[in-house]
Image 1: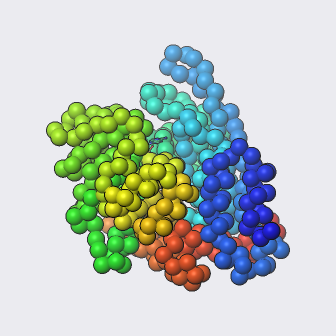
Image 2: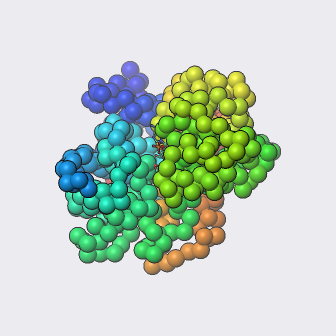
Image 3: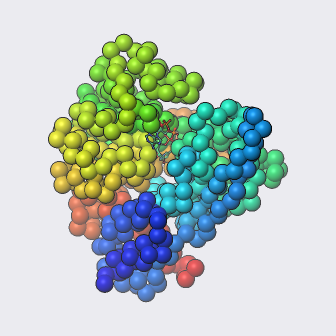
Length: 444
Ligand code: NDP
Ligand code: 2IT
């Protein structure tokens, strides 16, 4: 049996009941086949077996008391996946669906994404099955304090630097940082996505969404095209979706739809982002409200229907497996030309195959959403240097990083005989640096 097939089979047998982890590993390892064939020394060093086994998995109890005095217990996770090229780096996700499979898929993706940024950061991910929806600020604070009361001993500015992800934004990072500082008595860059008054970086809030659009813009530019006049569908209405919408609009596109986990809004005249920000960032409300406030906008229950809206560019920015085979087929039938993944693994393996067969320019998550973690690394650099860069400076660096990632994955795909296959190109370009470092470190 070929090396990649054998590693995948063993991985599935050793990690049963982890479908998301299997899915991410399958996509990655299949993309790496041409590299592994060129480097027989990797198999001798069991490189892929080590690459797909986390260096450390931390599971812990998170007890907390709600405003009515009721005691709750949640699960806490931190998967420190790979530190070959730098300290573990990756977000924390608070969502009821969180389990080990999801954190491991995110952690594995993060290794290659972080490598693609060109910055010295390893891969990690964490979170909890805690559901922040409907909780008061006090309950969120209590939960974050309890979470950090265990996590603090495992992280550090040169060891492991968490950040936000689904359900973890500026408010949560603030509470987590406050507790870390209190326990450790040190004010350091141990978390990114911090507020501007305590070590955060300008443009980190916007970075993932802006970065996604910068990469898509480069893909358009290389085909003598641009965002101007394009119809765009964005899924989600959280951090990534909002700032992807903002940048796409600035570049002249019309974003016509957004959703949250209850349903989607369609606004044929173009989404009014100030209304969305008010509902989502200020009121923490539901996207349904948009249709009540904006004349002519429609609300539809359920998420899947969003992909039946005809568009030139689709930017899935909510969660994993939002676009399945059926939705991909409808998008293709309706003429989609570009798909840029803002969320992590938003397209199923079958959905990706549909896009690639149809010649859609498909920009995979680990490349397309790398702007967030790249700007986190810029935040780390500013913390270490006791510096504070202007918005324009950070934004220019972000744009440069996204353009470089696009060309690196494009070139890697060409070099390894799969031109235009950015899934393989991103996996290969990300993996080579990690592989070189792991080989240099010996069997560890
Ligand atoms: P937020 O929590 O800010 O927003 C998440 C959005 O996705 C919300 O609109 C939420 O709706 C929706 N959503 C979440 N789960 C589901 C679901 N199961 N079905 C339908 N909708 C859902 O998170 P982010 O914007 O930060 O993250 C979005 C995606 O981007 C994630 O995949 C994340 O891993 C990825 N990402 C984030 C980065 C960052 O810097 N924040 C960096 C790189 C990737 P509702 O409110 O109803 O739950
Ligand atoms: O998936 C991701 O890249 C993130 N959630 C951001 C991670 C980070 O460390 O900024």
